[in-house]
Image (cartoon, rainbow, N blue to C red):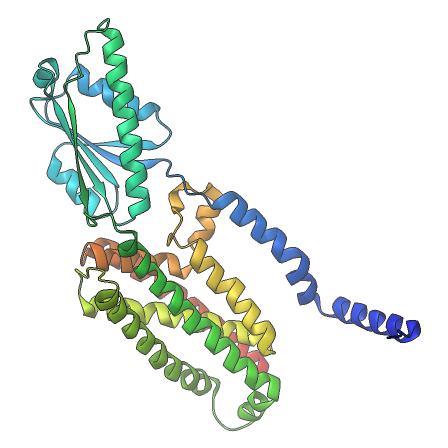
Length: 373
């Protein structure tokens, strides 16, 4: 097989000029890998650090204060004091703390009798983080016992103490109970963003969008006409996913289906808005598909809290996660599935979805008007 060097150099020159003329190719090949490497390299971690932990001390004393001091010296915990176990439990329900340590009123007396115990409650919605917290607490407890033994010259005042732990929301610590609701958010991201981006881009590619815009229909009619069919399709996929989660994977569902429907609607509108926005930028199906995967699917998978703990990420990465719609939907899904209708959590995340969906739809309307002109 012979190669004509003249034709080969001509083709290479043409491809080079095409790449220079199309900045998106350079961005995808050079800029994007660098950006993603920075974000994921620094942001993705499986460690749980700075975990907010509630501390309840019924009868304050030097023993309990010494143990809490050990918690404060650990980089894994951020102890928050509560006056009663009820107040601490309410904080856990609202997601303000992930664990509770309860020093009962007889702790100081029983520690001297070598028969003391402390209550530990761990939020088990995130099974991986729950296991890490348990392990960390066991480590701090062991260090504290060792320290007390050394202080008492080997007498081992705390050797008779027992650590009693309870796992909340996910008593069996099944990772599936935590992962499946998050997967639903990722699937809906694909359904909403990727499909709308591809379909509308196809219209731009074939020139049918310009033909549609040349008719008397308004841009609002075009957008609504595009959104409704894919909204219904996405909600159908959402319903099927929930049924599979409950009946196929046996994930417990403690919340309300009405709340789930409203939250899913808000998230799907945000995803559709992202897809439409991508389609107004990328006029080819290939580019639209690539952009949809990179801009929506990967952030939803990695930066939504679905697998990796957002609180363990560096501050700049945590700031970025606030613009990821899946972050809020994953929080709602995990709450509705595992804890029920905890309205402070649901309202806060639903409000964020309303803002994001409104933003994307507004930008799409403005950009589409410019194209129409």
